[in-house]
Amino acid sequence: MTSFTFRKASSSDLDGVLSVQAVVFPAFQEAKATFAERLRLYPDGFFVVEEGGDIKGYLVSYPVRRPEPPPLDTLIGAISPDCDAYYVHDLSLLPAMRGRGAAVAMIEAMTGVARNAGFTAMVLTAVGGADIFWRRFGFATVSVPALEARLLAYGADAVYMERSF
Image 1 (cartoon, rainbow, N blue to C red):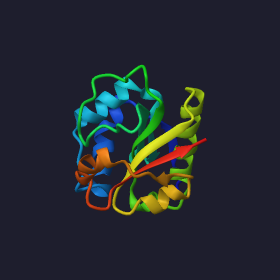
Image 2: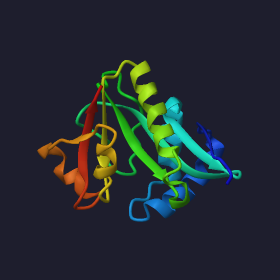
Image 3: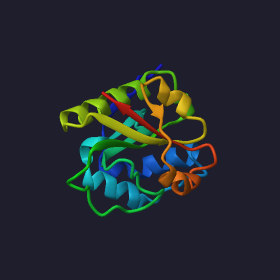
Image 4: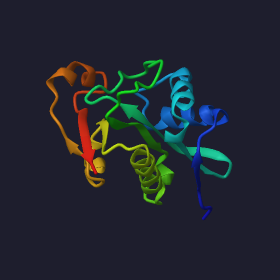
């Protein structure tokens, strides 16, 4: 079995990221421009998993203000200087990569980036029942009535989650 490579993303990886997104999140597509902006704004928080020369997964993360995750497929323009949490924008792995340690590697790297940047909390929007996965990493669902309409864009089962460390 070929082992995977885990590394920071580059702009040449974006087509591969879109290919993974199309398989993993067909109902929640974001434009290449959205990913390119996140990579430009916070390159330390954008990782890819590669195997056999192909992108097989990715993780996008960056600072935000709580509880204000950006809406789906929205350009944000800049990272606000008054951010108080680290946002997990997206973690996607092709089915063949699951259970092989790639997600754990990305989450550990992302947590290190968040800690090194001085954050003590991470936040995310879990979709499609992924809250079960995120609970294994210390995230808990937080009810924020002001986010209810925004969460609906991610489906009826979407939840906002936080983790302090």
